[in-house]
Image (cartoon, rainbow, N blue to C red):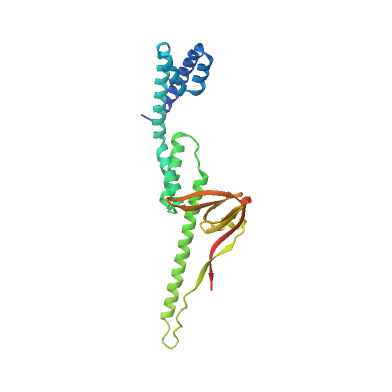
Length: 254
């Protein structure tokens, strides 16, 4: 069955369900106003209670309503499946989980993007999750930058080793000293926080003691963080106006 056929059947069955509900509501109002309002506003729960309570008199309109309602739900689920809705939910869940666990890959980001586009094309419903896509792209850019820095450092080290090998014994360079540094927390301006996505920071808020988090995002009025717990990690955000001080973990040579 094609998506167009499912859409048409879902629309027809939803209309039949609405008509059946109006019929059942009219029957309920004939008994009393309370039942009428309950069936109209709280169905299908109240409709089931009304049908059971007045089974002998109202079983036919009740069964018509429940039959059309059930068929409409089944068709809507089938339509959602044909649109690729479940694949979209799975891709979004996998993307969010990878952000929490810091295991974002290009494949996961592409899977979420393709699932979103496929759902929009098949359903005609404009679906966008710009926040999640932005977070995925930011994490990928951060990893790419780290890989470039590591590759450049390895290249420079290899070049230095090659230069050292070219000297004879008389002019051989002195052994290189191992760089020594320590990790310290340095003050960071809130306006500059967006430049350090992925860094470890300590945040002091009003009437809250300083705590350590991982900076995961920044917007005009808030900063996003992640913190590990016993089962993994969780994400949250603080408004900038509530942050009194923020410090970033940095290397300091000595």
